[in-house]
Length: 56
Image (cartoon, rainbow, N blue to C red):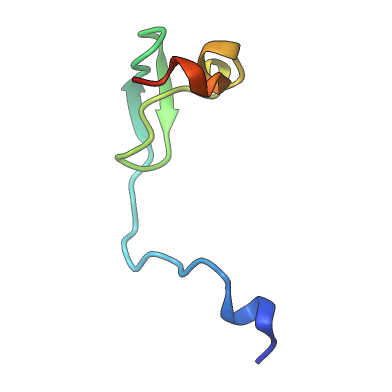
């Protein structure tokens, strides 16, 4: 087994159901792939999301 194979992120045993959720930033509905995904891809591309100095 190579080093890169040993260092891979393990796959979850859970099968998550994709479902619509409201984005915590823009409040628009988007298709969430797993329960922890709460910000849509459009908002993740904004400077507000990417600017670590704005984090609380």
